Length: 386
Image 1 (cartoon, helix red, strand yellow):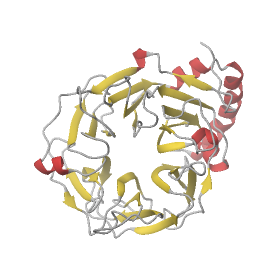
Image 2 (cartoon, one colour; image 1 turned 45 degrees about the horizontal axis):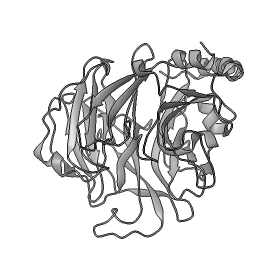
Image 3 (spheres, one colour; image 1 turned 180 degrees about the vertical axis):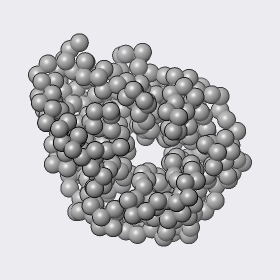
């Protein structure tokens, strides 16, 4: 549980610690004011989830079950489209099953599948899986992923990377909000690209089985804000959503809500240290955040890890106040200019992060699925030169 008083005490200690770490950092980037660490050449931190010669495997998402060790993972055979592959780990991501059977129409998925745990007002647990474009489709499991329904349309609407993020709401049990975006092509049948990106929200009141008609949060043509990643503040009172800027004219953006998603602040740019795509974050045991994303700076800016799989470590107030954070880490060098890092981020008991994504990890080979495993203590040690 998140405890406001504890977090305030941690905040002071962490700010002091961040200053010390910056002093002793072993790797620094001239472009940033905070240290840059590198896990790329440390094979002990990586596990191959799936690889197939000559076959593109990409865009995974994961779901950690309540036992703290079972992780479910889905991903398409293709770039953001193709039949859905399903795997399970029962030991916290150290090993993975063979590919598991799936309902027949999962082979018709048109986009990136996303997994989410939901619980209805009666305490019934489900895992739901979204598949986007038009119409957005939904499958569910009521036995922790042993059996699944077929994909069925959630409504007469669709979008891109549906649903990239989902959160429970404090307004009552079984209530959830999910978010996605569209560029005019997939929200309605036979749509066309408009040059405007629209960010949508949709709500469920029955534990994720049905969803409301999407409402617009923001739309714009100067900045193309998309692929939302949601993080709740430690005191539970605020939602922050990190956004990719697809026009590459400005930095990535962030918006906030203090009324459970009913209203939102105007988008503002984030620091250079968080420029990128598909931000996905989780809290570690000490209250710090680890956010995984693909490093993509705006066109006029440069980064030493552009196009790579990277992470950011800091505290929530860094997001709220627009600060750089504590340090960045390159998880893996991507041999492609940009195609990688739609991650699942899970935290096991004991603070082990299991961060799973795809990328072109070997020159000239098709991308495959890889997990990085680490603790924040291990990263702190690297930052301190240990």
